[in-house]
Image (cartoon, rainbow, N blue to C red; front, side):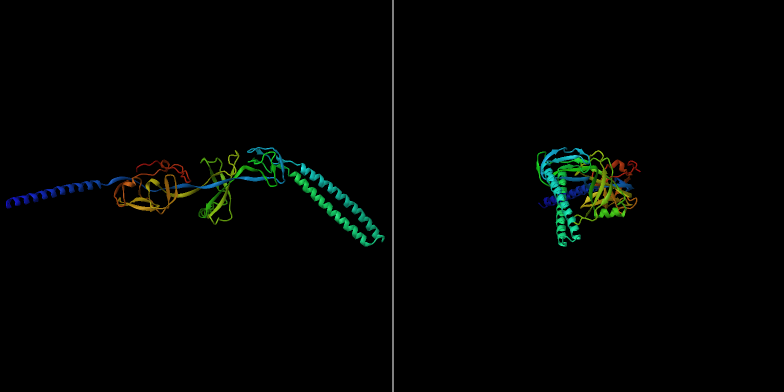
Length: 399
């Protein structure tokens, strides 16, 4: 019985040793496999592109006509004639509306008659005054008679002046029944049609002169100060306009003036640009985007695909002299369609960074760098919302 137990114990120990040997062999194989997996891999790397470029910034703009006025009735009455239609061009002085003028003609006739009567009475009184003065000089009547005659004449003269003023007012009211175009322009909406009874101050239409237009847009205080430092204000700086359909307007404009104060609630300051509008494409109240181009000398560019975004910060993987990658933050100051413009001190001149495949590496990994040369023309398309790059470089190629 003891012999059997001893044999079983020996067999059990042998089995454990065999199992340990097998596990050791498997572990060795796994370690060998991991070592093989940790082999240095090839990664494309690049150095920042330093070149002159141009950043274009967009600003929401409101288009207004060079002249835009409301035409309102100065008198009340029935609208007899509407001589124009909405959207039609008119010339300065052209008759647009006619209000029934019978009442105003009668008022003028009455005022004219009262003026004539008042003038006649005044002239009669004037003759009487001259006669009294002669009698006073002859000492036929007293000085008091002359004073009475003078007072009567003054009263009648005042009445004549009042009648003249009434006639002028009647003439003016009669002239208000004909509404003319104050300048060349385009008629907008006409809310009241012929036959409508209108009151004093009723809107008849509005008239817009859009041969030239103003584009109003707001700039932040920070950007305004930057423009001022770069001497870009007051020099008729040229700007572009993007229409509501995202198509560029064919004519360039110039910044003419800026507001005199910064809006306290928004922190912005209003700019005004002027554009020619020979085809009358732009209408009063249109919307669009002003684009202002700003050249940047020796801008440092890195591809967006070479960066990672972590908690609202932008990082790149730089490569040190031992070919190890290190995560480093950069501060983009402008965004292109496929590139970032970063601060020149974010990366050292000639410092390499991993071009692509960032998901396959981590901080501290060793790589076999394959240097390529960046070409912005092959990677960059015009930016949809603002910035774009203009320069020429050769295609990406290994060095």
